[in-house]
Image 1 (cartoon, rainbow, N blue to C red):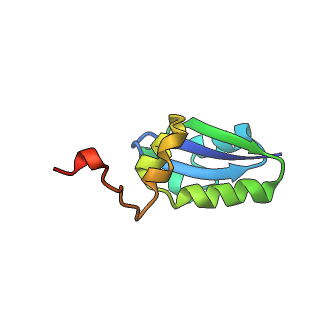
Image 2: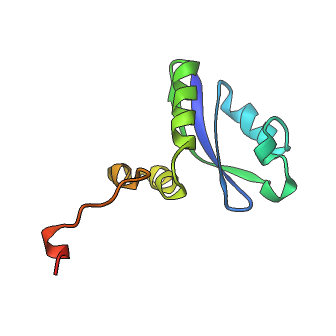
Length: 103
């Protein structure tokens, strides 16, 4: 089993990672160990805001890499469970105007 997770750092930024031991990994981040991003004290403490479990480590890693490429708005939509908003938040996509939007 493996996890993909999102941490909210003390400075309001998000860290996306994957691991086979979620509790241990969060503890490492909180101590400033293991990931350069969460090492600076201004980013700690961290708080787990989202996680999903996979059967295989490569699946969790692939999910981590996908989410790392997402915008902050798209990550927030995922954290809040607004899955229907994810396609519209894809980078480089323009929302097509609806008929009622056109004067």
